[in-house]
Image 1 (cartoon, helix red, strand yellow):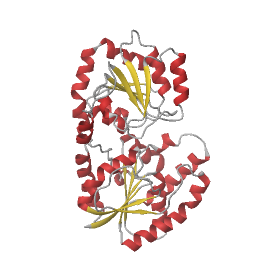
Image 2: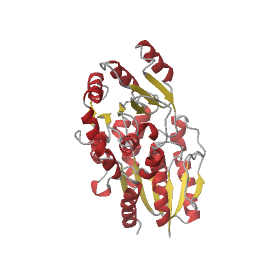
Image 3: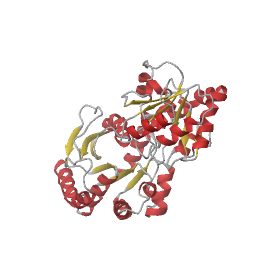
Image 4: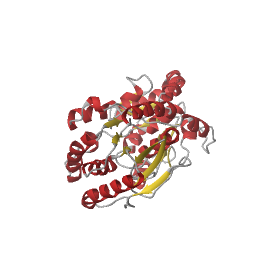
Length: 370
């Protein structure tokens, strides 16, 4: 079997990490996997036989200048590790590992390099901060060192081509992989909540934009449904104060983190997602896999790709309180519409099943790693 380095920042509980965890079992049937990490955080079960290596144990909120200065030293460590292990094939995830791998190649590391891009860089780094300017500069200079790049959405593909000079024939889209069977099994568990409800899942931070969701809910006429929000984060107290201020304490519930959000997704009347920016949202795919009716902000990137022009869910403009409220009102006023969307949700989610995505990935990699 060919040796393959799967290089990612960590295996903590994030979206890219979850996708990698879903791909690893099938990749391990095809390659001898060496998982290379930059932080010793592993929240996902790894297949038997996968060898794990750490080139550092970085702090999660490390100073940006320090992170930048460390790149060449980490590249040297990655180069030495791969040379010692005889690894010639590199599959790299997330921006910082891609920078490290590209610099390692400049320093003489041989082999074939495939990068995954799980965000839309122009959107992620849209402000004028030093971090954003440096990140965009490095993407433009270093991503060209890859033999092939796999963005996870059409918008990310177009962004890399138009704004970062990546040739289109050096890219193809690899959508996020989800474990449909696991989600369906977990969705059958009971919940400790009686009554009908809207649901949202995500960190309580500025980007997930729960304030728009709560203010939209406050506009609903005759709100027969409660609103449940699963997640923790820095805005918990702010959002709870907003709920109290709007006199919604008996109707809107911040239930914190739940390791199994799928049991709520399968029982909600509608899953409402008001995020400002995403790469390609796993949680939207997971909600569809649970048979939920989805209302989502038309954020960049991936929402329109996933839901179509209202084919598999309803899209509303980002941070548009009135439009979001109107879509939520449909759930109350048009139950047949909700049933129609729920009936086709799971079929849409199957397109992103880990076995189908893994097969497509392995076919791509086998052509590159010749």
